[in-house]
Image (cartoon, rainbow, N blue to C red):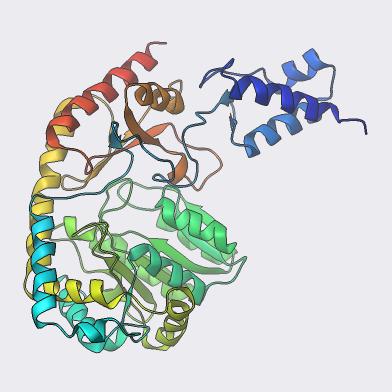
Length: 444
């Protein structure tokens, strides 16, 4: 069979990229130049580049050109690729404070001596045991969300909470409004379930709510996914006025609000959660992975009463129930104040890390909350984020580009720096390297 010309070009270009002949950031010929060089139509050249982009080998940027991508960087989630054991990881947050392992040892000893271990080995109610849910409800009330245990479901971490929410509420093709830059885990979940993500541009310290209203007027929007208290990756906290308007738009158009509060514990004195303002239309998702330990996969979903049965069925379909052992440890720590103390220590830790970042990155444009574990670092239009990421990888430092966070075809030139997975001394050195590579790339 005759091989189409564009396939020959794709194979040749792919071999050069994978073989390292064209390094990260190499600008490829324009569509017209490629067409002229190969004696093909411009549409055929465009088809070749589209296939290379679908293979993850190049990045096509409107108005700028086509560039070779960093093949070591995943495009779906920040933590998808393995980070070498000897590398400094600024791509993924796993915040920890000293003494957490001792807390676990103590909790396990207490369970062994006083707990009903036989009960922990049995199947549990899909939504969690009543006592565990009551402990979660008390915790949420301390954080501004006045709810009862009948509206609480215990899940295997906040990501699982988002998954069961999407499975219970949405169908393939449903339109879900999201920020133009959003949490990569929801982006991947939406693609897995065939959801249609409609990006909302940023407008200052929050999403453009005029754009949200226009979107709802023009399309049937099923839900809006939002992080009103400490947005990942931009760090904003929506004020009372924006929260009230977002809720009003959602109510007016029959839109369900999915509120992700995974990092909300870091923002003290934040306005009330959206689930407090509009409990009848809001599903609130949070958990202990970031505030306590990433390995403690215990999360919480708070939902309007009519939606609880559907969410319970989704939990049954995916994991039956959250393991009783981890739920029992979480309950103890919620009740005895351990969670509150760890959250306070992590707020202090995050502020110390942001202070280091502010000092080292002074003069560079950036967006961050003063008590968050990440920094958004916008770059100039001629700076190549993937080239910087590749240069840092050679220095054994892992960072994330904007690609995993972007829900728009045009991906902004930026880096997301996670501050919570390395020792404070290492963090300073790593951020100095980031600054060096950003400034070096800008001089090219």
